[in-house]
View 1: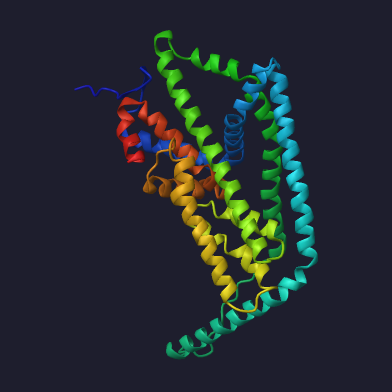
View 2: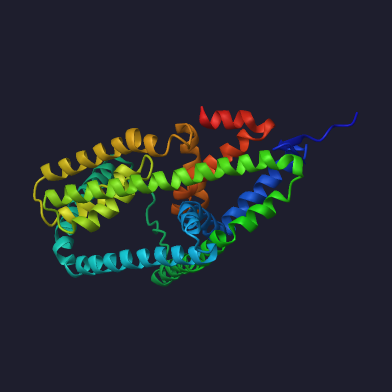
Length: 360
């Protein structure tokens, strides 16, 4: 008896999938391996796509004022580059000032780390007293030495920095071409499908555009609100480098689940040079937790959740998976990728149960 090959209909277009479970597992493994080993290329493309969706309304608005789309795209890209350069210049000056006064913060930090190490050594001593004695007489301790540890760490850091710089170099060019040639790319995509199916395909792509644009715009607004609130709070309590601390803490606070704990680090590090008691730190932690709760339960649902309908379990699994694949970049891109997958599943008849589960 002949087994029929499953057929998936995307916008009434049919695609035949392999009916063997092993073939699907192998295909999934190949895709995951590609995403891992080609992470620099894929992440660069995805960041450019997100920025293109974010900036496309501005280019369209300039086009309505009779500015050619290519010229408008060039102006927008140059304006964005100028903003990043200006922000980078301010951050470099703040970081340089902070590093110049590092001794002010390193002394109390060294005291805290020394106290923690002393406490841990005491705990280890008590545990060793409780544990069994050394029964092996004359046994030699195994020593593992690593050759040139500094060199290996340096090469690892330089490799990661090279990938970041390479990706940042290509993003402006990709962004310009995506913005300038949007209509050509859109038309070419429509030509991949028969005329009778293009309406549904167009609707699917429009839904993806709305989801990604809503996510980028909403997340940007939440980030600005969070950074400003953190900055004003740190400035009000007289914390040094309030802008730099508020910027880092506010952005870290955006990370789901772990963000609130990560946001404790910058004000703790800076506050060690100013506060001598535990009370101010508890107040800072309470304020950051309050901001995190407001962001997760009020700002993010209001600004992002209207379009990006994902349940908490789907978000958690997505963060774990994409964070494992791409690290920090995966944590940033996990939600828009999962939201896009949900939109596609909603428009694929056989995958609609998956889309409903992602949004349940």
